[in-house]
Length: 415
Ligand code: ASP
Ligand code: MG
Image 1 (cartoon, rainbow, N blue to C red):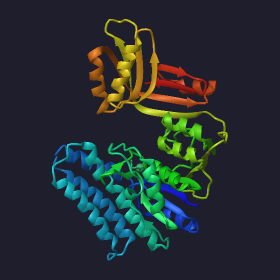
Image 2: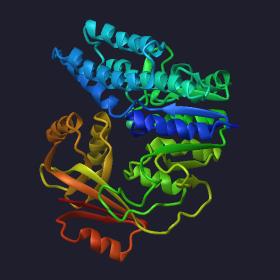
Image 3: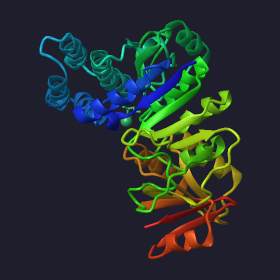
Image 4: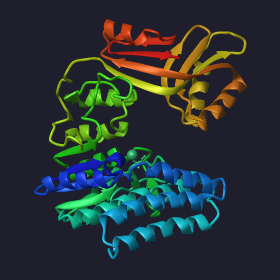
């Protein structure tokens, strides 16, 4: 039975991390493994800049691409002998981007985005596969486009599970394979992507298809914590988490795992481990069916850059069902997800991520039918399993604008 390992950008951000990761994989040499990689370091962000420059015809796309080349060249020269075949393979991938950049941008931004940004994962897996061979970890490089079939909703592609299950089982035969996270392929053979941070989801898709033993997501944190260590210095490791709790935490914005990751694993009862690639011998967090979350402590989630939008009828009459249906259809039209909502007699408030592309368009549409006020630069705090002490310490020195409580979850919008 296979185990599926996923390594994100931070685990392969430089030569030292890559060597550390090599050691980890060698220690699992006896196991049947599918290893999924994201792009190295911040390469996806760098490639997004190339796309931005290309679609806005800013003339500096070649320069932006050079940054990506320099980053990889620096790593290559430290890992491989000058005559290694990897140099040509990497070069060919850059030529693919250069060909795209020579032509005019496509009509569809998301299509261009996927064709260019996906190269980050092809680069990282080519390099990692070659490096792992070199240190004695035999492996087969697989193209994720031969594994994961999607629709053509570029940048947020939906998985065709049936085709994917049969592709995966036909392709994955080797003891060790290496493949790209984040990437799929449409029925017309174009590259698609599953959405930012989608590599976790890729690992879950492959595990689902293979009926894997377990999935391990290797991170730069000790596991799933009860808070982001960036905001809370006393963040504590959660050693055990039920699938349902993990889904809730990811839904409210815990960044450790991509929200789509849990569902396929839960369906097949495949446990998910989150472990530290720095302290790889520690057990980390185990997420599985039928276990109580422990330790039983409040979990804190912070979402930054929120905007609170208050919507009321221009005649100040009650907000009725027909208004709601109009508001939700606009949210859906602009694919804006509601993080929190609250209704009063004459207004309806929603708190959403202040996306610079989507929100201004949404506001414009809302203003056609409603009176709209907003308050931005806010933070949304969520406490799961709140206690009176945890709430008190959270609201202390904060200008609370909105608060909402259910049995297990408390949410606060504050400045
Ligand atoms: N490289 C992609 C990203 O940064 C996918 C991932 O890391 O999961 O969004
Ligand atoms: Mg990443």
